[in-house]
Image 1 (cartoon, rainbow, N blue to C red):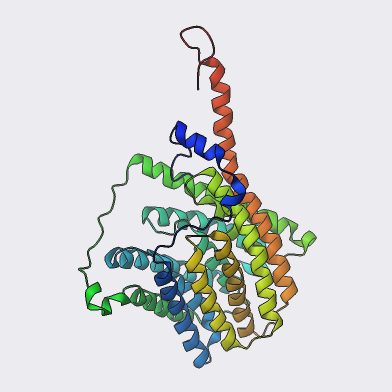
Image 2: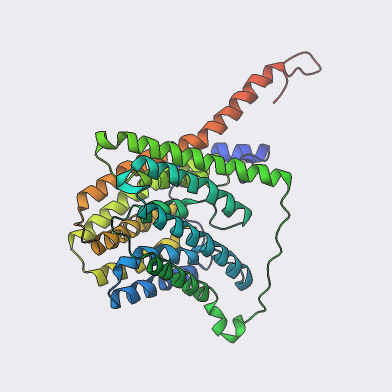
Amino acid sequence: MADQPEEAGGQDRVRLADLNPIPALFTMAPAHRDHEVAIRCGITVLVPLVTLLLIGRIDLAIFASFGAFTGIYGRNLDHGARLLMQARGGALMFVVLLLATLAGRNGLSGTQDPWALVGLTTLVAGSCAVVAAYWNLRPSGSLFHIFAFAAVSSVPYQPPLGESLLAAAATIVFALLVGISARVVPRNRHRIRRPVGEPVTGLRHRLVWSEASWYVVAAGLSGSVATALGPVLGIEHNYWAMVAAVVPLVGHSTRYRVNRGIQRIIGTFIGLLVLAAVLWTHPPLWAIVLIIAGLQCTAELFIARQYVLAQIAVTPLALLSTVLAMSASSTEVETSGLVYDRFIETMIGAVVGMACVLTPWAWRKWVLRSDSPARINPAGGPGQS
């Protein structure tokens, strides 16, 4: 499940041990052309949503919104590498959206059968994690695919299949064009080269499937807990727990991953306050579209630098997209219910995700501690481990 060993040597161990985890939750990493990525992603989601609003087809907004996720891949890569990664990311998202619409149309998921939703979304979590790893997609993992599959298959009103897929495909193509749009400037017209892929070794195969298995465990367990506790806690969006559960699975160390889970909870809480303030004003649909684009820019501006700030934008962004989907089916939006569900299920998912991170870490520590007495040094005393 680890991208790199948690501790590479003695100096690394000392540095990690001396690191106070509280400031690390709020540390701001240096910028790296993040404004360029933010502008591209904002345009990628704004133009399709405005187009759908103008032609009176806001019911297709959820497909355009998830298709726009294509733009988040390969944020600072060269044009050739970015185009390839975004094409792969867009293709995978299109397949997920196709499967989600088919599942929703056949009553296999959503509010009709929450346990089926958990099972199918868990399969998506594992399979997309494998594909994303072999394709070296960045961001890695299957978080966006979990969200897309569960959200689309749960939509109470399913638009015509062809129109839904057309909206998704058109947005994906638009995202690819935006991704290489800098080439309109002559100095940016470098030769597009296909990146050379790294050979897949036996160790790489094992890492891919090991990490994917943790996506299955985290998503399946969190979804099951949320579904089982749903009647007791009064929560209805079990897939929000599944999305939150896989957040801590990405990172270079155990501490970093646990911090991601904590940051998810903190950012969600503050983001829900932002959402409540926005919905309290009862904004019209055109204003919601503009707010979504602005939040998308903000999220990408901070996602690689400060996860709490990014999550403050991501939380209202995701829920406002839900509001658009509900408005298309003339479903009344209950603000308090959305806020409550989101926070409780984020708590469930984040705790499960952090437990999945800490379990192998604790197992390694226990094994090392159990083996240490058996190591005898030449002088006959206990060995050094």
